[in-house]
Image 1 (cartoon, one colour):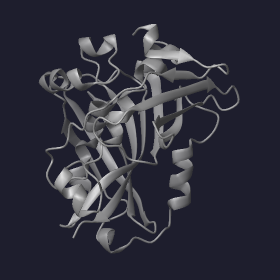
Image 2: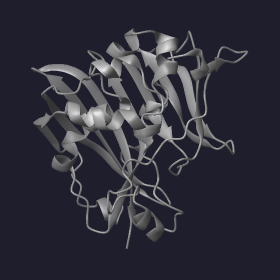
Image 3: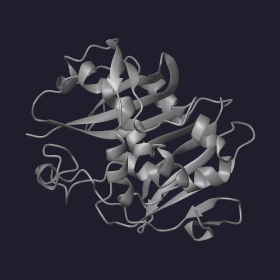
Length: 276
């Protein structure tokens, strides 16, 4: 990391350099990242995954929290506006609030639109994160037709999960904000989240003609780092479903374990849309 990667604003906010993430999932047919699928929904093209944007905060998080971030750091993010491949975006990370222990974060595009926003912290904060507040207010909501068959409370245990070193090596050249730890096997946010998503096929089977996209992600590492080439297991549970005027929402949590020792947790809210 060099000083050119960010500057410090008058209030102590770390302001990242402009970066141009690439849509690495553009070939995933039937996903929101695929141009053909996205255009069926009336969109200009395939969207970049929110977890890719989360990778861009890494140098700022290390500057703010130090190396301890990789061992016990949480990034809690809500996605507001999507971007296309190559569209410039910039990350911001504010000072730590002494009352909550949260550091506010956000990402903006060149037009000033908020791509995502949320908080980061280490250890246990003294307040509920905005995403967990969203979950609390969503509990008890009725599902729509797309998620009517989803069983709230369904859980699975012991699902194998491993991100190969070859996949880390393949993804690193496209990373917009690499840090030294990746060279020794630490996973960037996108791949760490994928490790915790191993439970998804076992928890929920979406109806045909549906497409999902990230709405909110809270990645909490408490015995990290999460590493490539390690055999983990994953437990997961469907927490609740709901709907907004445009999408239906699916909330689930998962836990990553190494030799029965918890390493990280994921809280995920996905938005589900009808494709056909």
